[in-house]
Every structure is written in C-alpha cells, then in structure tokens.
View 1: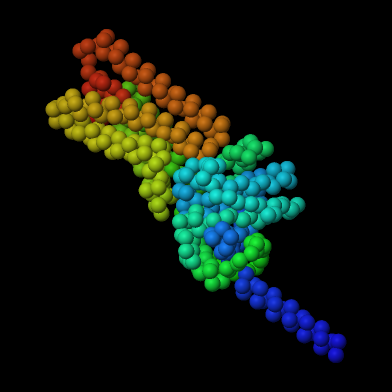
View 2 (view 1 turned 180 degrees about the vertical axis):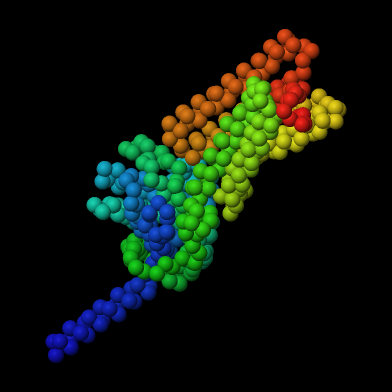
Length: 419
C-alpha cells in the first residue's frame, strides 16, 4: 500500500507540474547569435484592478561567452520608442537599467519612462545573468488601453564591449554586435490573468521549454551565414578605400606621373567608383528591412548626398572626355567635374568619421582615420596650390587634372584618347 501511495503521489506531482507549465508565462529563448549569446525572456501580464491598468511582469536572463559586454531586451518593434532593459555584470556585480530608444542611437534615461521595480537581480559564477522586473501601466505605454494587447513585438541586442562609466547609473554603451526580434501574442489578459489583489510573482524561465513566440527574427543575419555586422564592415572598408585612398591616388597619378598618367587616372577612378558601389550596396542590403527609419541619421543623409555626387562626378567626367576628344571643350563641365571631385573626397572622409562615431568605434580607429582624413585634405590643398602656381608660371601650357585641377586636360603621349 505505501508503494502504491508513493506512485500516486509522484503522478500527482507530474500532473501538477505539467498543468503549471501549460499555464505558464510566455517565453522566448535565442541561442543563434554569432557572438555566442544565450538569451531568454519570460513575460506575463495581469490586470491591476487598483490602478485600472495592465502591468507587465518579466524575467530576463542571458549568458554571453565573452568577457564583459552588455545585453538588452526592448519592448517594441524597433529602436524608435521602445522600452529597453539593459543588463551587464562588472566585477561580479549585476546591473539592470531601463531606458527609452530614440532611434539608431544609444537609448536614453528619459523622465517619461513608466514606473518600474526590480524584484530580483543576480549573476552566478558561470556567467548567467538573471533579473525579474515589473513595469506598471504597460498598456498605457503601448497606447493599447482595453482588454486585449494582441501581438506585441520585442527586440534584443548584445555587445561584447564593456560599457563605460560602469559605476554610474547613466553608463554609456558601445554599439551592439548583434541583434534580433521576436513577438508574443499576449491575447486577452482580462480573461486569463485578471487579478484583484497584489501582483503575482514574476514568471520563471523554464529551460528546454518550446518558444511561445509567434514571430522570430533570430539573430540579425543579413544573409545565410553572414552576420549583419560583417556587412557593415564591408560597407565601411569599401567606401573608405574608394573615397579616401583610390580617388586621391587617381588625382595624384594624373598630376604628378609621366608614364601614362591618363590610364593610371582612369584605372584609379574606375576602381574607386566600383569600391563605392560595393560600399553603398552593402549598406542598402543591411538596412533593407526598414530603410526609412535610418534617414534621421546625419551619416545616412550625408551618404546619400555623396552617392549623388559620385554619380554626377562620373557623368561630368565622361562629358568632359567626350568634349575634349571632339575638340569642343566645355569650361562649365570641366570646372563642375573638378569641384564635385574635391567635395566627394572631403565630405566622404568626414562622413567616414561620422560612421565610426555612430558605430562607437575604438579611439585608435578614429585616430587612424582622422590621420588619413588630414592627409587627404593636405593632398587636395597641395595639388590646388601647385596647379595655381604652375598656371602662373606656364600661362601658355594647358595642363589637365579632371578631378582636382582647374586647368584643362594634359597630354598623355602613351594614351590614344584624352580626358
């Protein structure tokens, strides 16, 4: 008989556990980040009869396999207006902060944030960070007053870099290295989770449980096996190579070389233009899901201006070349070709610095690119001064520098055409 009772008791425990899991909170776990991140979020909502609002109870946990860094989960579909809960561990001490995202910038601690409390906060020796929190008036923040929150979107992001000002509540964040999104169908909370007393306990994360999300953006992978961050790296390297290196090299080749200067100039210009096309294509591919929300950033707006300038400058160069071959020089086209080329180099170099600042690049990278920028400015200035000086000394000689020189074309004895 005692043996039968023990079996009956064990079955009852299993049934109770299964029932509790069936009625458990919604949960999502992601393990597909290329930076080796294991992240979980369990959420539950309830109607608070005292405040006449719907509150959100959540437990957020993650484990990153790199030293330092931060991980966050955002309540919203994008970086515009989402509530962002940020966690990190420094010297074994966990920290959790609530901020609001205002675009593709670092989330800010704003006075309009809803009231919230942290019920638990811990990090174990294996590196697992976990915290439970309570956000009051969640439906008011969403603008979804009523009895059905429906499908709500969430985002997550992570960075392997350590935040600055670690002992300050307003610590700053490095740019994220990976991100993703998912959605929960919160459904009719009045029917399932209507409470009249004190709020219930925060939901627990059940490892091994199937995800309850209705949509999974996974890790921010731009193509199969290609992390989105690598596409941005390609964008930066291609544009810096084209605008800050190859374009100035083409101008120098035409101005200061005697061995087939036109061909060298042409090859450098073609290489620079192709490199820029790759860079702009990579940027468009990376932001293709929601390109309009990036148009508020100065780096993107200036980049569009530079793209139009490159197309215009190449068109003017071709028109200048046709006019010169046909011995019908057009001073306006020539001057416009020269001036646009100068602005592309200067504005492109400045925009590269803006991009690095936006990406929270390391100081050494900023110093290196700033040095290249300064060299480009010096090169442009020296060529302009040298051209002016030579014009004064050789008034009868026509010297052509299509990109940076105000004079008409020079002669290339080894080329069959002129530009």
